[in-house]
Length: 223
Image (cartoon, helix red, strand yellow):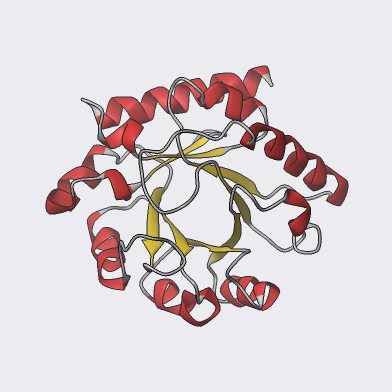
């Protein structure tokens, strides 16, 4: 895997052909798995059984993004199902430190997610613990939304915070990522890029993943 990682979101895949869709992105660095409970978000997506099916269908590590109102109580479901990385929302977790360290003790990479309206400073007391920070560049709930430009400033803030603390978690961005804006996002500090529609709605998802990896790594070298 290169320094820049691409995580296609199966939210945009054809779920009637899950194995075939996952085969198309075998060259990706992660499979991004969006869990929405219809409560924290206005949409309902995938649960544990679909995650197990994904794990049976691909060797690509699974990055499970829990957009749920009770992550503290449900993270173990997804850890048991085989998620390699689990991210929970700052806005939804009552016991964030406990949940993250619990996942790490189980051998699962643990991360925290910030919605667009949540400031980066909210992470000041937890940044030393996390394996990944996910900045939402759209409001969570639906695929195919446009990138929120203010995410760039948040990336710069987050990168500065990490440098102050002497830590280097993965920095992921989710929402509206494509070949048109990946360079700007990488240069601002991201190194994991979620791409749903840009990959699965393209004519050749495998080629699109390779293109995003190439553009991302070129931008990282220039940064």
